[in-house]
Picture (cartoon, helix red, strand yellow):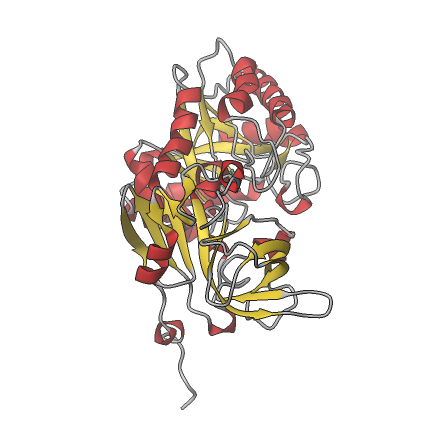
Length: 426
Ligand SMILES: *Cc1c(COP(=O)(O)O)cnc(C)c1O
């Protein structure tokens, strides 16, 4: 009945395919997932998560290294537990993320703590848990950390996050390694700051870190940053401040549409070359590249609304579920779960929220009817973690597909839960 569908070869999610006209993840029909768990639902593929992590492990085989998954990309306990079992470390940016990692079975001694605004309370939690390293971003933070470590009678392991001032050629909101943004310490100030750290009695200098931006598609800026870091490490060693590890951050991009990000091995090759023959441990903090193309957002069309200049497909997911299109004008592939050949039209796929920015995709050819399901692809990273309850919308359920089974790893929120902490005035 249906014409053979040739689109599947172009999809960025490796475990997505189509059979008898039905879209499937790891062989499980997405229509069945929607029937069991409702919509909107984030659906992740365990095989895709494992393959993404495996690519990093393989590319780093034979090199003393640690891959610390950047938790903020997707902090669901189910996802964290998959990576913990594979031996991953974790890059956190809050005390809350530390609690998640530990609850998911992650090891504290493989946790690095990034972020410009760590509170004393968060430092205390992380020191008590025994994390691997604090990536410190300012002189003031060094002082706070030294004081908190003194209170606890311990020494805090630190790396300075330096700003190598290279242009990652990515979206300005996700570019972090240039002069004039809030992250890291200026490269020119790094030596002086290391001397200062070395003089603080409750710190133990362990390494150096950088993170130049996100959705990087060109390995050259990162290789340039790595060269600068290596020179800094040599200058420090000459001053009697040897470093045990070098943290090259995250940022490797993924394909959403027609981008051509380097394979992990090709991204890493020039970096490994920079550090060839040295024995510092190399750390990485990939987020998006581990989870982005392991997930999709499953949503149902509530209404089709034809217009004079545009047709709208109004779906039950919205900008509160997936903020990237509204926030970055990001492009996500939209695929019919069961296409209806012959009904193809161009649609803007929008949510029900009272904002013109509430769109998930614009100008897409879709062959659909009211009540049909759509899959918004490449939604595994910065999807659920950036979601909100705007318009008092319960957040989506999250499901991990594993072989032919599907596991709810976050139940759909209920409306009473959304205001359970609120009170009317007496
Ligand atoms: C966000 C972030 C990451 C992860 O970035 P991706 O682009 O998702 O790989 C890694 N390290 C730090 C310090 C970050 O802020």
